[in-house]
Each structure stands twice: as C-alpha cells, then as structure tokens.
Amino acid sequence: MNTLALGPQWLDPDYLIATFGLIGVLVIVFAESGLLIGFFLPGDSLLFTTGLLVTTNKLDRPLWMVCSLIVLAAVLGDQAGYLFGRKVGPSLFKRPDSRLFKQENVEKAHEFFEKHGPKSLILARFVPIVRTFTPIIAGVSRMNYRSFITFNVIGGALWGAGVTLLGASLGKVEFVHKHIELILVAIVLISVVPIAIEYFRARGKSKKDRSAPPRPTDRPQGAPADARRGRHAKR
Image (cartoon, rainbow, N blue to C red):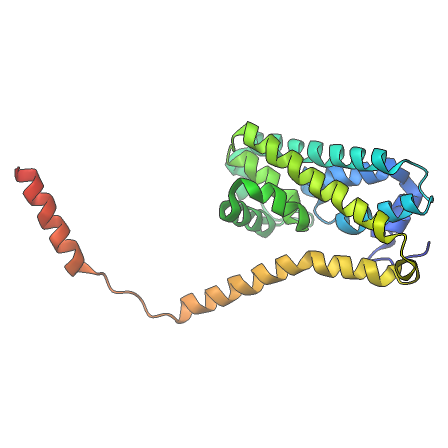
C-alpha cells in the first residue's frame, strides 16, 4: 500500500509501520501519549493505518492483540507523563522554548485541563499536541491518582482501540483502498479542527477584551455591604 507522506517520510504512517512494525507503533503511541518529545508524532493516522493493514493481512497480527497492546502503550504513556509532571512540577512552566519544546503548548494543555477537568484526559486523546501535555499537566496539578488512572484507562481505550478499529472497519471498503491518501489527509485535518476552533475562539476573545471599555469600580454596591458588616460587628 502506497500512501501520501504527510510531511517528512519518517512521519508517514505507512513508512513507519513498514520499517519498524508493531513495536514501532507501540513506541510512538507511548511517546506521543506522555513524553514531551512526542507531540509531533502522527498518532491518529498511524493508528488508522495500523488497523487498515491488520484487516488487509499486511500486518500479520490478530486485531484483538494489536488493539490491546496499543491501549496498554497509550495508558503507560499517560502514566509516564503524569509521573513526570508530579516530579517536575511548576518548573515546567518556566522552561525556555527550544526547537522541540514550546511554552505555548504547555499553556494550551493547562487551559484545556482547567476547562474540562478530569474528563480532559479522555477528550485530549483526540486532540494532537494537547494529548501529549495533558497528562503532564495533571501531574503538575497533583490530580487525584485514582481519578487519573480511571480516566487514563477510559481515554486510552477509546482512542487507542477506537481509531484502530475504525481503520480496520473502513479497510474493508473498496473506496478507502483506492483513496487512502485522501482518507489520511482527512484524518489529519479533522484532528486539528479542535485546535483551530480554540485558536480562533481565543483570538476573538482577546480582540473583544481589548475593545471593551474599562469597567468602573462599582462602589455604591460595596457601601451597603460595609455598613451591614459594621452593624453585625456592633451586635
């Protein structure tokens, strides 16, 4: 199966699987799930392609085994990210930018975690970049470990097995075989939609805040409260 390389060849799912096999898939899933250096790896398209290759017998492993191992790698990856976050703590937010590390990615993941709470561990699985940093932020925030494990396993199963099974199911469709390049491009585009939505939402909010006039201090409402506190104090 020849696919369209989505960026450099070493990021093309077909090339990665052909070169490193199932072990390579598991290492990539682990790295993207919780290691700082894994945020750029092609998680969604890689899992989809893996499922497709299994159902077409080009990856000689039982589908149940592949899904189980992928889920395990995803859960262990988030676990590593959580423990790293607990150990590093707030110093992560002070780390300078480099070619592989951008402070902006940490801040986005932190906002995502603050907005969605524990369920962000499930939602973030389907958002590239954010899924790498969210378990780390959970560790930094010292999220309850039992809750973390619960949402980690659920998210790992839904994403790891879900996307792989989707590839296996659609792999039986003739249209998918003939247009696999377009399918992979569509997966990448769909996966970045949440990032684009959040970007434009934040941009619109920023413009709105800049254009809004400063709010005056509402002192008349504060006076009665002070007076009431004074009366209660006298009593």
